[in-house]
Length: 236
Ligand SMILES: O=C(O)CCC(=O)C(=O)O
Image (cartoon, rainbow, N blue to C red; front, side, top):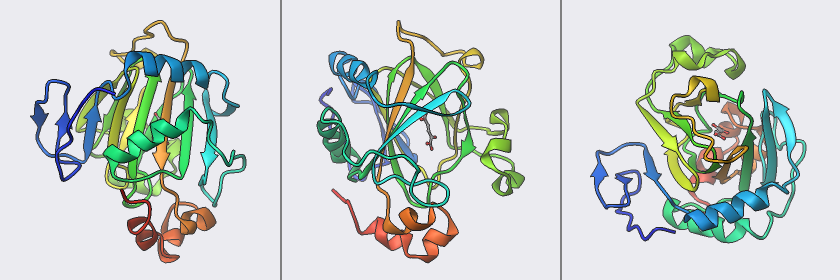
């Protein structure tokens, strides 16, 4: 890992390898969180993960305490592969939150992320490997979109506050509950670069509460105590 000293409080700065910082925001971008060699090894290991095609050219694999719309996801693997454990520890040290769920995605060229926010208060560290793609964060989407399913939302209707080109080994830590995020397909992304790789992988290091596990993300989980459970557990 590049030797970076993160200032407190977290979410105060975008940290760059030369130590310069930009104004406060709800995300921290850490380029080259993994060295090139570490990222190459992890990329190679992920080729062997038990991928399942989920939707629109997106493959997924879920390690640990997963969550999905109605509760836990249908297929999860209780123990993460050994190669992920030291990475999860290093991510926890900078995000100040442990993970009990590592959600992995493998994106084919057409795979997109439609605008959405993640569960309330959730800190989402996202590590990317392989192809470079632009991740769009913050800003706004039409008010009516909050009542629409994610699958019905258009990426271009998300007016993002920042566009972060996520390269091989980069980490982005964002406040998922506050930050809308989205991503275009390769052909619509001027910053897309294959970098000699077949895939763009992402690993999301999440903390799933018992309430989310039972009810999925959303109001039911919040009524069942999600906010307190999240605030009081897994802190580093
Ligand atoms: O894997 C990605 O690139 C983003 C996934 C995402 O936005 C999410 O799972 O909430």
